[in-house]
Amino acid sequence: MPQIPETIHELTVGQLAARSGAAVSALHFYEAKGLIRSRRTAGNQRRYCRDTLRRVAFVRAAQRVGIPLATIRGALAELPEERTPTRDDWAHLSEVWRAELDERIKQLNRLRDHLTDCIGCGCLSLDTCVLSNPDDAFGDRLTGSRLLAERPRHAPPA
Image (cartoon, rainbow, N blue to C red; front, side, top):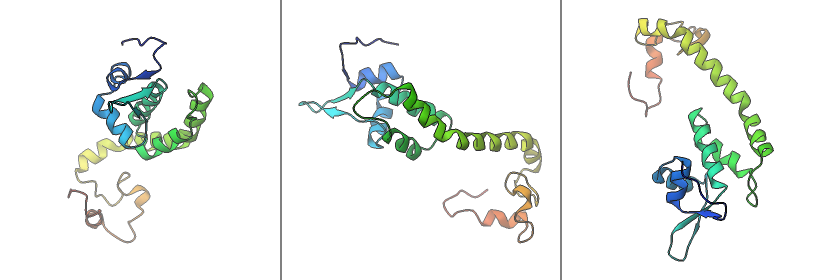
């Protein structure tokens, strides 16, 4: 990973990409979504503060665990603009997500534990399917095959 001298306080998009491991297109996307900021030079080139490296690392780590970009953007908005975020700043943000991540882990464990049953079924429409119909919540109203028709219109058919 290329080192950037401490005397350089602003990074070009290429330097930020090389140091962070994110593609230039990803950095442009992050900026368009309000996750990072840059200033423009007289020649209209982007320049990023050094602390953007930490912000990009935070965005990428949060994305890897499935945190939505809107949630990441909200968290980053809580960080100070006038200084590099501290360990305490990052700890506060991670604390906010702990319950959400715990719930996601619980759901993934349930998926793992019942995946073989669903592969055997093949359609995820069993009356008591623990994944598409946990605790048979729809059993009193509908049969499994009707659950497929209730999907949002934008979802591809099963």
